[in-house]
Length: 512
Image (cartoon, rainbow, N blue to C red; front, side, top):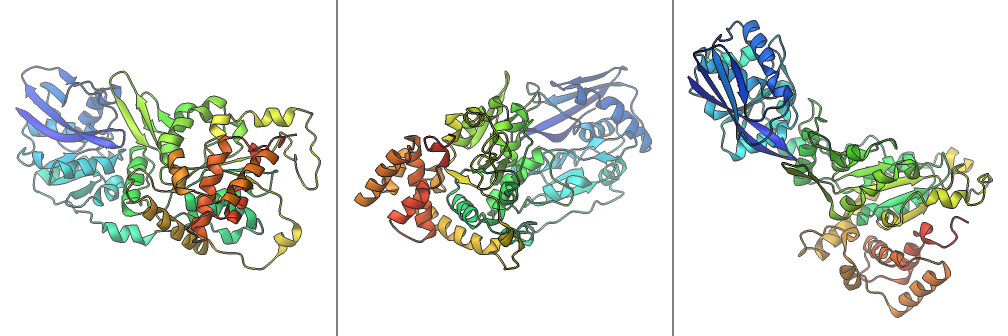
């Protein structure tokens, strides 16, 4: 008897429907076809044990399982459950009449219990688009799938429950989630707050500008100055995720298997902080079975690279293209996948190996030329993609011991949201543009026009401070954001003057 069950394979952040065909006939062998990988091929032992433990029998006949379309590689253990149900239906142990209404996915343990899968959300979206009635999946993943409207999601703990459901001897409980309510429940519910940071008002101002314009930023300062503490709090002043961004972010984390059973929807902006020993593949994504990397997990959020010069140069260089394109394409011989990677880069570094170059109190003990060599570990093209260079100085004791209340994140966020609303109106006719940082040189000339006095100030700054040519566009973009924060229609002299201050690393002789 031939029976079909339905599952899905995830490629990138999208899913593709897979038909699991099971045919049982005279003979004794077991065949698995349709480009299965080792994890799929090994399902026979798991399926046989789970069926027997659940009180049913594994047929001692010729079983052929085909995973269609047959020219696409099938990976992972999530096909165990649809294969087991297909075998039971093909051997007449359960009725096959309702199988075509459901997507079924899950990994089986030898005792019949069902383990979680990756990519439940994109699979659920695919099931809904294909007009399937419901999705039967592990209980640990059911909240992810339940946020998809017009799709019935059933969370199951073991194979016996699924068998009883198709035998009509037991009903499964549908998990319902109000997407809007789930979205609003934890929005902006951050653990950290800018109110925790004593002093550093100029750095807070720089991060507010970065958040308002979506600018990448690098913090340069001695150890213990508060660079990491400040970076951790940047997501708290970014505008809240909208529902589309929340779904997009959740999809990526679902594919990577990073969502906990309690999470249905990611409602706060991600913050990723990989260690400097990270490999190229772990940062941008890829591997034998391509998975999203840290830059995609930081999509719609912040990627923090602490001690930037300590990262391998190759790792930093592979990030250059995604920083421009806001997506990363991973190509393999048979297929290619694309992951979104629109993130804010926040980097931090010591000014030299000992950490005390330009320190107001301590002397730098680095040999001549060492500081320049240390800074040259970061290539010009990467630095070119960072708009704000901010020097962080240590907080003095008076500020540290002060009990005065400092500004909370929610107040800063309100100003950032207002500035972003101005940019939304400005770029309303440009679908790919959302904030000032994404402007092309042509757009910069159009949007960031300065007065004659402003042009003279820029010319003087570039000559006296020895600013590089690549700093010119960056200064104008940041000045435009400062003007937006001030609610000014034009880029004024004071906006340009403040923006020029944020180009430390472009100055001739900064490193001696």
